[in-house]
Length: 100
Ligand code: HEC
Image (cartoon, rainbow, N blue to C red; front, side, top):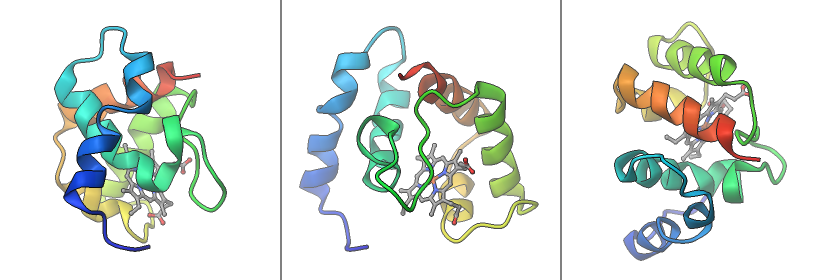
């Protein structure tokens, strides 16, 4: 996958997630927007990478924790999850599970 330009990342922050704004805090929505390059627009898979939208909240959180701890095999996700706290992962799981 090609490198993301900072502009593209900034634009993504304002695009599809805005329509699902509900109560999620802006910090979490900003992080979530960075996931969509790989996980598909709105968290809906376009093919190779699993979708996140509407997945079970506990399943998503467990997956992220296992990726971070290394008990789940990953190609890229461990590096991403290393950057996030458990609180952020909890809110990301809540956020993506709430998307339809
Ligand atoms: C560079 C592309 C990329 C980015 C960015 C990315 N992911 Fe992933 N994600 C993957 C891939 C590929 C997998 C499959 C596991 C692996 O190979 O690491 C995956 C797997 C997952 C899974 C497990 C899903 C399942 O059903 O097994 C979760 C949960 C997840 N990612 C959450 C996130 C979140 C949350 C973000 C944003 C903070 C994110 N990902 C950003 C590529 C990415």
